[in-house]
Image (tube, rainbow, N blue to C red; front, top):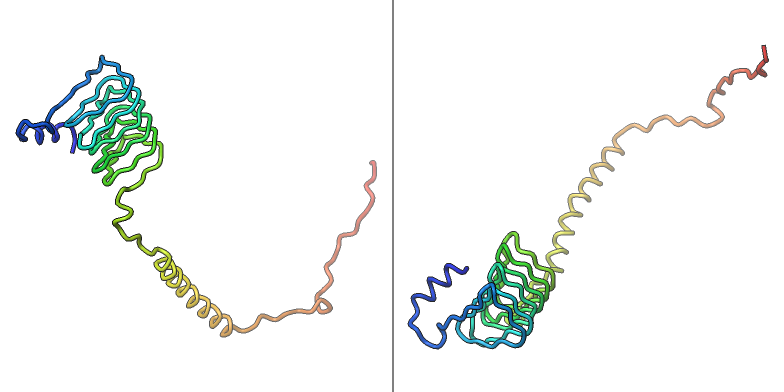
Length: 186
């Protein structure tokens, strides 16, 4: 979901506490802690903390944010330095630059987005991790099986060939060495 989809979805909701929209435009600068409900569209500069239990944070393409961020949904188009925690969804759109660790239940990173940090799923305790070790044992066994067949074919071919005659060193003909002469100065 991007800005346009959210705008359309938000316009269809009845006006209540959760559909409030707060906008900090690109000419605004703020330092400190920000708490909000509903939706916060941040297009300016902010340094500090951003916190919302149920809110949607939209960080615009011109925004520069240096903050620890916690919200239900975070959609980034601008620059963020700091850790992000999104309970439901985190989207890094193609113009975003994020430098920090992220934790979320659902992550979308568009081509062109820059992300430097670690990501962790909030669903780890709800999903069963696949047993990759058994998969790789099967894979390595199937890899070795054709090799074992090839080796037995090579051995069979080698045993069916006639052995090449081997000459003993005493049976070898001596090689003729050219006579060495001193070089004359003439």
